[in-house]
Image (tube, rainbow, N blue to C red; front, side, top):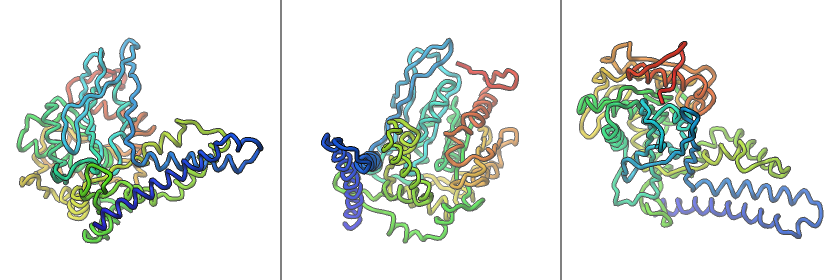
Length: 423
């Protein structure tokens, strides 16, 4: 019960801060406050506006807001989101464009379940849509899932991916980003042994912890030094009475957000200070750079306790993937069984979450895969987010990924070394 009370206490603190911001903004907006010039009122209003928005978006799932896509002949196509597979802990969704010729590149984006919603990959989706038929894993917030839905750990996550790949068929190219990289690799190995015809044509693994010990970071150091008992006592709580998942044990999104911010506390503090100054001066806008980033960054979701704890224990501490000793549903997968799926590794030189070498370790596990089907790219100067959503992704990595997809699908059409759209 104390964990449920702690969960509700965090929600109460968030709600109180949102109320304080709204109150300050409303107070400073009274007409009488404009009778005389008073810079202090402008500062109160600016603080209130930024504070209210900051704490409000912590519990709101962002919309996809995918703009129309311009394809061949300059025609704009609206993007419609359809659910292909619906499951308690996550759906497989499809970004369709009515009236567009079917794309020859079918891509499944495997989104992280690491505190943020799948909309974290919104820019990645937008960048791929002109050239690909895009599907994505849309994971649900654990606080909204009733206890009656059962558990969800790393094995369940892997089996979800297995089912999604089977649903989409073998004419598929999978791109996994960050946290799901080792589990996507495991799902592919599982298919290689249990249902070879359902394997995708290629895997692109971006900045994921296949072997966390290959290059230690603050994240891996934390996982190594803290015991599982300490994690369970300090990080796990029960969902409060406000949500459908009441009683479910989770790693709360608000607690995760506190950890995210603490890693770069000074940077975030400066960002909010500068935004308050811009609002007070009338220089801020609804969709300025600050709001565009923090609307997504601050929107966090709860993870099931079993998923979080099994990730730490089996992926980071036990290094079951790195040691080729991972068991799914009673079956020990063998990465050597992957013999036909082309695999490309993408890492960022300045990635401080999954440092260079952690993802590259996947190629060493693929002893049954010919070297001709292995590829790797280290993006100079790129941090973690830059390798899937920033300018490094758009200008350098994305073209390489599309070229890799074409090379391993038999539909490559190149001109002067560049990828030509197949739409």
